[in-house]
Image (cartoon, rainbow, N blue to C red; front, top):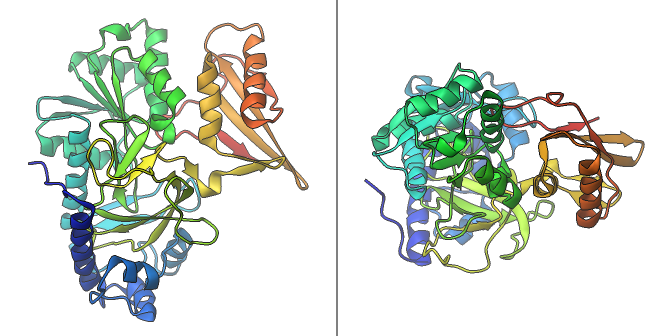
Length: 427
């Protein structure tokens, strides 16, 4: 059954404070990692307000978690219960450092499944649907949760692991799957393969594509490209992390806006350098406290994700959940400064997909002493006489005020990706 949502900001804060106290009561004193951190600050379940919690409780960083895992292999000391209580293990992708291995109890796992069910419901997915999961079932947490959430909803959940892209396309038609779950990059790759195989996607049964793993679902040009590649579909964005779980759902009234599941997470947005709260409408780093993941919690975790909080609250959709304008803009450690200009991958993707005619791309960042340069390799969608490179160079100049060399490469020269795309090469 759908969970009741808070009717006001005050009610939501009361729910969060009650869940926060339950979390702190569970964590102290049995969680070795947090007993040290929280003991020093005096943070425990006697906290009287969210403001007091934010004023006194220290942040948790990925660097701390990595150091703890190195000191206490293989799972670290952020474990509230004895090892026998844990039944699931997953790990981060390792895109920004060594992978972190994360354990979950059955209760933690069910909490995250319930959160994913809320995300599916927000996307309009129900027991009447047939969901195709176009990915391989490895140690990454996201799609395991999504698959089991589909089962929990009563939807037909169709695994696509271990199949080629062409075989996955045929399976979508065979099973009459009307919901596709994958990364934005891979949804575009499937459309590319459909063209190669002569598969007409205007006859596809897919009506909703639920994307995650990359910011693309909230980038206007990427959304437009997905909708063009898969005629008649609705694109629904979401984001989460292995170490925190499924966090956001797309606003039902506004594309490009993600809501935080605030009855499951206590969010904050801070300045990446000063760690001070930022005002609504300003860019900052998302900080999360996992209110229901008692067995392996994260408390005031600096996610590294850059976001902008909406100025208006409640949202026009009626939700009091924190609204993030533009979704996840990028990661604080992904930003590069090229000749004095701050550049995020999402901005480059918007330019490339917004210009059109790009099948795949790769960005090369080179450093020569103090000078940082950026160049882009592009596969044209169709044969091109060089006009695409000129259009892109002009678009970069207009959007970023930078001269960015653009090189066209042969079809198939650049790698394709099933999960998170790795298109940025930094020397």
